[in-house]
Amino acid sequence: MRFQSTLNIFLLILLGNLAPAQSQNGQAANGAAEKFAGWNIEYRMAESWQVSQTYGRLQVLTSGSHAGHIFIAPGMYSNINDVMPDLGTFLQGMNLTAYPVDQLAPATINGKQGLSGVYTVYDQMGKTYKSRVISVFTPHGTGVNLVAMVAPDKYEPLAATLENIAASIRATAPTVNQQAVAALAGRWVYYDGAHTSSIANSGYTSRSYQENVYFDGRGNYQWSSSGHVSVDSRVTAGGYSSGASNFNNNSDQGTYHIIGNVLIVKGRHGQFVYDIVLQGGKLIAGGKTYLRE
Image (cartoon, rainbow, N blue to C red; front, top):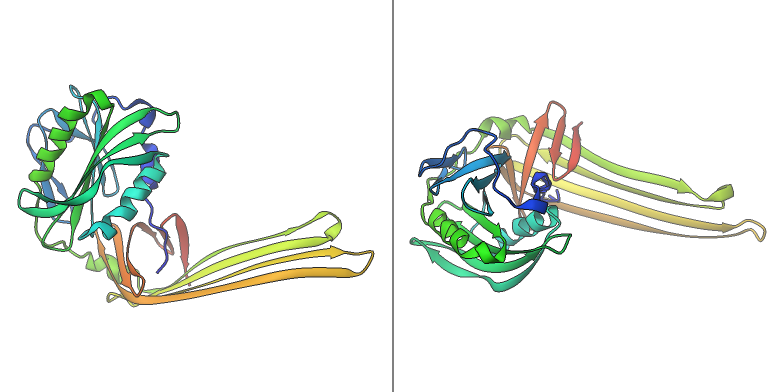
C-alpha cells in the first residue's frame, strides 16, 4: 500500500510564536493521567502543563508558566525505522529544518527501550529552537513519540519535563477497532490526471495516476497502482512529430488493522501508518480521497 503518510495537522500549530497557549479542550494538568483511546497508552501530565490542542492522535501540551511546546503522539513504533517517517513528516508539515546535536540513539527510559536525541531546529523565518526528542517503545508493538521545542535559552527545564513525562508512560495491548476494519471492506479507487495542450495544438502533455485498494473486511488487503506520462511535440510545417511515454506499475498485499482512527498496513514493502477519515463512500488517507467502487 502506498498512501503517503501524513501529519499535516501540524500546520495548524502557530510556530511563529511558540508561546504558552490556553487550553481549548478543557483537559487539566496537575499530575492527572492522560490516555490515548484505542492505543491503551497513558502518561502522567507534568505539573502546570495541560493538553491545549488535540489533532487526531496528536496531543499538544502547553503551560501557563513555562515556555515551549510538547508534542505527543502514539504509533506502531518498535525501532528507529518506524519512528523516523513520522518525525520527518512532523518537521515537513510545520516547515521546519532540523540538524542533530545528538543523533537519535538507543536509550532506556524507566526500564523501557526507546530512542533519545537532541536537535537544533529552524523555522521559515530563520528563528532557532532547541528540541529534545524521545521515543518510548512498549512491549505491545506500540510506542510514543515525544517532542519538546523551545528557545535555546529555555531548553533545560523543558527537556527535564519531557523526560519525566516519558518515564511515566504505561501501556497495555492496543484495541483493534474491528467495526472500522469491517467498514473498509470493498474496493477503493484513487485517481489523479491532467491533459494540457500548447498554443495552436502544436503539442500536448498528459499524465494519469490511479490506485486500487481492496480490503476484505477481516484484516487483509491488496493494492496496485498505475501511472502514465505522455509528452508530444509537433512541427506542423515539416510534418514532424516526436513524443515520449512512460508507464509505471506497482503492487503490494498484506494485512491491515485500525486503532482508533489510524490505519496500519503491513505488506511486502514494510509498515505504513495513516490517520484516516471514513465518510460513507469516501476514504481520506494520506491527503488523498479514495472512492468506493
